[in-house]
Image (cartoon, rainbow, N blue to C red; front, side, top):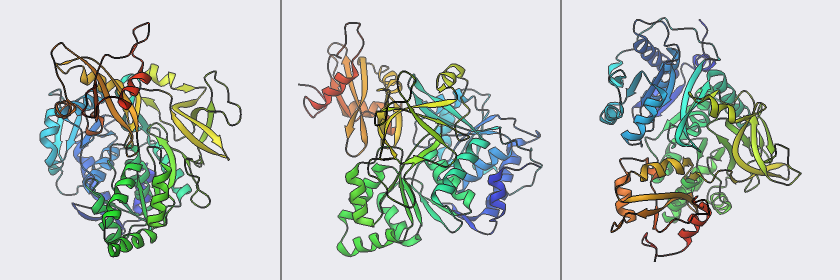
Length: 503
């Protein structure tokens, strides 16, 4: 039987602790047994799922890893669902992926049921898996589709980014090499597991290395500090917003506690920041608090990780370094030529780490590549031998709290509000979030709307980080052709009253 390299790695670490989570402490051998049980259950009388999409709504836990591996071992494509998302958003992902099975944690079963759009989709609770069972599992070629992670696109609705087992292997081994992962590493996971940051950079790297991944069910800054002190992790990865929250907790602590917290960090070997630009003041304050200069890197769902500051050597604030091992990166201008030295261009990437396709979107897949290079949509400049990010090429992608969200998707949801005739959503610079989601709206006659009532209405329709934080009720600025000018929309949020309405 051909076995995935990730599973081969796990077999060489059978007796080591793989996962520490709310549901217990588990070894690699227990993970292998549990994932085989789940694969057997999913297969039933079949011999191979043959790339059927299996969505799963499971919080960070041993059960998450066993479910993910079980889907892979049965020959399926794993589609992780966000536990923070409302049923309406989950329903879109499940339908777009055409998932035949939805696996849910018992605590999330009601949400999962609400998200199923067809009786042909089978709901399975993790409590149904029972005791470990051995089964004859399919041989798996590395070029098979393995995972589909949904990310916001410039056209509105999220797109399924499909990666093969070979893509995942390339992404992980590149990180293992660059950041010198080892089996005695212990990483604390405080990130969601429906994005590549948590799935690949944290969880799968730890599992490949034979390290221990300690999982929090969700992010809590005070609890992260507690785990730093008690569990003694060696590695931590997060987004800039999380580091800012951790700094706030440290600054509110007593002098004695601050010393203990800082000492706990100094025992660790690596702190990494990604998914959004790292403000230099956050880097400097974190270094003062912990002694660590955050290692900033650059990646995205389609490529995993592309650029990194060095593990050993100078890390330049505001820069994301040079390509990871095995990854090729270049800059191209709007004319398809390499820009002159010191001039900006769009980041393009090539290598075995780059995704296979946007699910059932052949035209969008084709347009995302230029001569075999994936165009990321991010603008950068090369300075002092390293890349410095300048921003997104599209104004319709907002980078907030480490999430890239589509302004068009949010606009589509807001237009269904009974009082909103038209709207425009923009990202506005924010020292805490990177960018905050802001909405300018035109209302029907005699209608009123406040940011509080809008946010309450949106909770059942949008993920928490997509809900607008600021609101302006105003006539939208348009050009001569009637197109909304988003630069001028953004300017509205530097003017007017602070209660969510313009003067």
